[in-house]
Image (cartoon, rainbow over all chains, first blue to last red; front, top):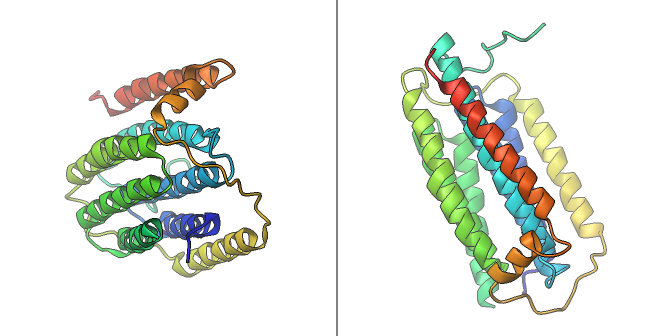
Length: 103
Length: 162
């Protein structure tokens, strides 16, 4: 049984759903950030799979995946800086207790 | 055939590692499991004949981002007694499961217009042409550079000791 586009897309969907579940349920801010990374990776898998099976000669999906990686790297840098600043100010990174901006 | 076997092995390990990230109580072990998942995704890129992206995945995710995450885990170690869940467990499971069902339904029911062309063997040169060549994504590359600069400055400002 050969592996086609659908296999990669469903795998990507499974990884995305796992990441979404973790991002919605976890209380530790670092774990939430890790789950967001998981979701970005799942999206990248589907982009590269589209690139391989739909437009193999153009590589458009791979270009998009590179830009997703750039944004993911920027997001991790800023997100971890926010977490460290929160930890320094509140000595806590439990996101159910960080509600300074909640009205 | 070899690609199919590699896909199934990589997919099973990647999904197990992703489940471990969500389910493990120990934050440090969850971070290591995330690294394993990133490595499996790099292998999946290889099965999709995306050699440059596989190398970039190992360098950026396995090398840099995981080090940053583990650094944050270490620096916040004394408050992180495990990774507890909030009270939204069941609704979140419902939302994630529904999303997965919608994705699977859409993927299975869509008539994909597949191309039978052979994929490019080394993708580095064609990717460089796409990014920097004529009618390419040069403007987007420049915007990505500005975004990275803004992110670096923002991170430095946020993390600086007052």
